[in-house]
Length: 414
Figure 1 (cartoon, rainbow, N blue to C red):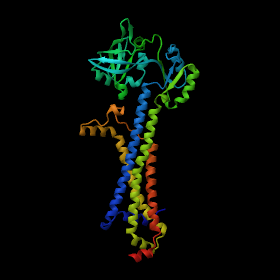
Figure 2 (cartoon, rainbow, N blue to C red):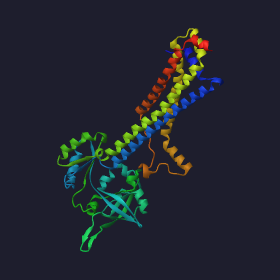
Figure 3 (cartoon, rainbow, N blue to C red):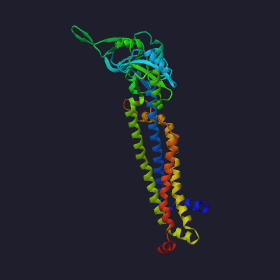
Figure 4 (tube, rainbow, N blue to C red):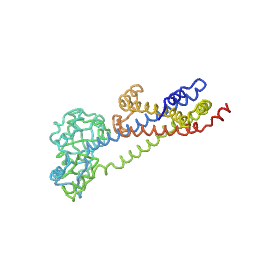
């Protein structure tokens, strides 16, 4: 398609002489702009993909994919409901739980907490808790006086395994002299740190029987958490659970609970993609301007080539190759830079924090304690092809303008 002399002339035009240095500078800025645009787009999309995947993975690993509840609020036959839920194909875990709010106090400090009562065996079956212990042992979570605390909450209250924390229940005890707060003391059996600020700073786990006593649930629970093999297809499991467990119960899945949050992330992701694409578009316009200037500067050479027998198509291909080379090199450099940055993003974050002495990724703001990045092959290929397409399109008008130049007029003006 492209002849050898066309490649030779296109490369020679890109190596501008001293008199054409300004054109060369514009071409270099175009290449740099495309490289930075592609790299930025890849990095931002990878970080947003990683952020969503980390949040989704941690939220769904700690909270049930579907919660089965009674229509009246409290579930009495929870063991039978959990047993029937486990019979549904695709269900990997079904655990009864009690969930309620309380005030945690220790060492003169107080903090709000979300208390979850779960059977110790069911809690040990959750890998995210079992693998994130930073002190103590789940084996110590026995009896009615032991709890499992998030590491950030423990630091705030000045607690460590073996210490005592006091929990104040939201329901007060009514006495002849008025309402008296209900409180109970528990031994800290272990600490967990899953890397998500919201959970590490507020969650407390205790045995189910202890939670029934503390929240006065008697022989009932808040609901049964159901974990499935494919949480992204949770809509397929709901009718199966209703058919097996019973249609008289309420089924509340994770998409209903967190729909607004993940929809907002998706909207932000799409907007960022469009905004950052403008960087590549601006660089493509720089290619147009540099090629137009190159065409004007090379008018005499184009006329000589035409008189020597070069066709309009050959002239058009020469300038197409010149502009496309800038776009292709910039895209490849941006792809390499973006992939390398994503693979070492956490190392770079630590390096910058060490140099500046400041925390660049505060868990209190971003929910996670690490900066995630997840490269999507299809998305990366799409960004690369889009950048190549924009730069190729940017060369068409200058190449067409060079091809339609009249050699007689060009030589007369010279």
